[in-house]
Amino acid sequence: MWRRKIARLDEDESRQRPADLKQLLETLKLSARTSFRKRIREGTQVLARADKKMAKLIEAVGPCRLEIEEMHSPFASLAEAIIYQQLSGRAAATISNRVKALFVENNGTDKTISGSAEGQGLVRRTANSNTTASGAEDQDLARGKAIGSTKARGAEKEGGGATTKDKQEDNSVIIPPLVMAAETFPEPQRFIDISEDALRSAGLSRAKTLAIKDLAEKAVEGIVPSLAELDEMEDDEIVERLTGIRGVGRWTVEMMLIFRLGRLDVLPATDYGVRKGFAVLTRARDLPAPKVITTYGARWQPYRSIASWYLWRALDAPS
Image (cartoon, rainbow, N blue to C red; front, side, top):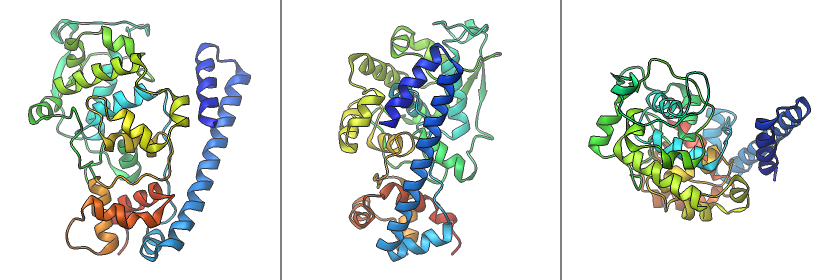
């Protein structure tokens, strides 16, 4: 309910920005954050009582600092998720900003461009250094955009995921001489209208370009739910709906459920970091199979997202 109110007010604010509406919006967001943190504290206590091993991990790691990243629209979040697949946080953020810049003139007005990188005065730079997200908060931010951290990438290969060639292409980042920052992606129709060459010039691989094109078409067709619709849908229903989109797999949707929608009962058992953390928790020698984690994790319901957060922290916890 609160998400629908914020979405409506946020839309009204973008048109008018009256002081009283802006203040009400910030009040609602603060109230939502406060409520979420209270649920996190309650959930952590439930986990500690339900599982002695998890209780020890919670004591070693400390309070759960799981935060929700604001979501402007499901389409924008999924588009960014596709861009972030198989890349480190900084490299992906660079490409994401370049994609947004395709729709912004130097004076800040919208545009839709096409053509080659050379024709736009773009230059190519290899982005192999200084691209690793650092710190626990950076890892959470990366996962929130549906990308695993350096130590904890999602194990699954997404439906339209990158091939080896695509990964090599994505290591070359297109750097325009001047990029105007944009808060979020434009509406889906703009991505349908823009050429594939223009998207490729921003540093996207062919697979990701086709995936974003498909996502835009699905959004226009109404297959991608609105924020209000997501608020009314069950987790499994969201997973089933969104995994029918090219380049969007279960792991990507699970990251959105946890870090964008604040769903607290999600256990991404295929995530490499979760599997490594579970091995630490249970002192297993071998990397556990996802089914083993799912079975054991039944005791963490309805707070499996919080348990997942602690599993991601298990490798760095004091022994």
